[in-house]
Image 1 (cartoon, helix red, strand yellow):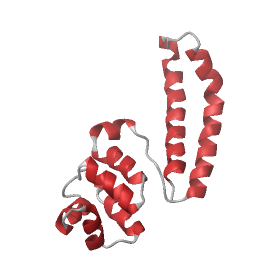
Image 2 (cartoon, rainbow, N blue to C red):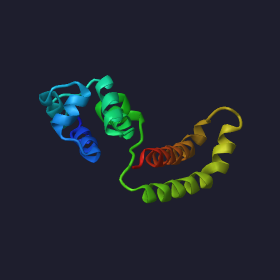
Image 3 (cartoon, rainbow, N blue to C red):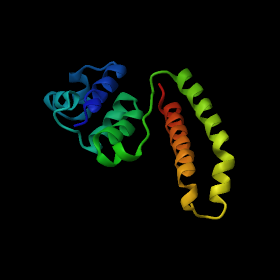
Image 4 (tube, rainbow, N blue to C red):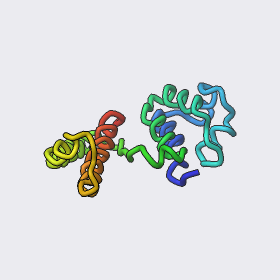
Length: 144
């Protein structure tokens, strides 16, 4: 399992103010199973994570579970920072400005419905900025 995935389940439980015993009872799993999830020894099934997100009041947990515990998530989902809503809002504003800066280029390249060979490097820059803005937007959505 991805090392950074090891404690997302424990973090969500702790923020919810639940002990492992309380959480395991509400989730219908053994304390041992919950401990193994929190230690990174086993990856919980998606249904368990959905229950955790509900019980813990942590919508971000499902996103982070997919991002960190699956190869596809690691490849396509942007990193988020949910620790500080004010910072998340400011980063979103900054990233939105960066997208505004590349918008004319994005429109020019996309107008003909294709990306020509000589446009590929610039398009990579455009999509990088859009990807970063997507991560920033999700950080705002999932901030506590």
